[in-house]
Image 1 (cartoon, rainbow, N blue to C red):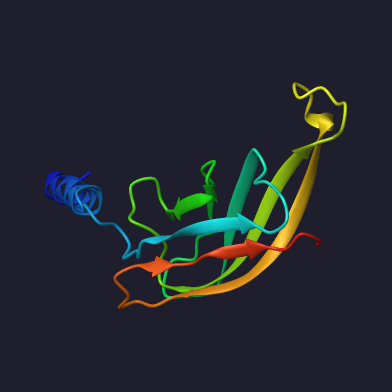
Image 2: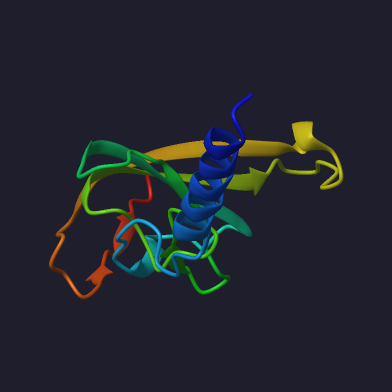
Length: 139
């Protein structure tokens, strides 16, 4: 193998790794946060949100978030990102209720409910997006 080619290939690989790995920001993301409110009932102990890309500028990546006990959430596309990649996302709320008289230690004791919470648009020039969700009493 040619020594000059090997050296160039190694330097190119190191440069690419440094360029990609040292990026503090990664893909451009916008902070997305809000509150999930349950109408006519107490908030469930477990509540998760799922953001499914519909039309996204660039990298298409779904994201999830958990609600705090007060219903607040903040969603991130990546572990170290600020939020979601700009675009349009379908939003689903999944929450879990313990079946009456059931053992909370068993997975089968919990009833999952899914609520389609519409869409949210994350503009590329937004500084942040607050998206509050109301889950009706009867789904």
